[in-house]
Length: 245
Image 1 (tube, rainbow, N blue to C red):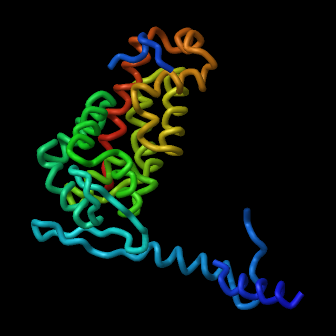
Image 2 (tube, rainbow, N blue to C red; image 1 turned 135 degrees about the vertical axis):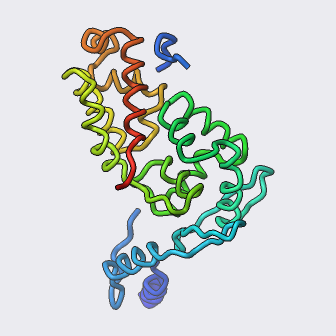
């Protein structure tokens, strides 16, 4: 019994679909004593939001969160710091688009957006690393588009996905009938919830199946494949025209 008590005390001290038609292109007990999980959580969250400034090669600065542990890899497979990753990405982006307008044009079409992301991955910036960077720059509720804009242009003010969708609704819906509005509203809700992956062309058959139970039912309501694909692509151009006022 004495041995069990010693071990228990020691433990408490150390508690811490592929359809060608659609392809187109054990929790322990809560420790006792002075441990206060609520206060510890609040402190951690406060620290997580603390930011540090990273100076880029051109002398300009970008801010990242200081308390998120990260690991990045260079194009040649070597581990690099967040500062190096950000600097490397800053140097690569002008090779892929010349200005904000060209980035918006590339990103607003699912086909050219996919090509841009593939080019970034080939240059050593895979999507998983870009998503990690999205957390570092505190834009998890925004779009990867906003992350690239921020790195490219530090004066850029990001929009949340929800704000972007709401700002675009009037313009988008003015061009649609009621059935189309219902579908695009559904797509936007998924975009707000999950992110830009919901706007990938490969995701269209899945979204239609979730919304209408089958692709045939979707075609009965929205029209043939060509019309649905055009609707899905064209509404995105209006989505990314939005800017922070």
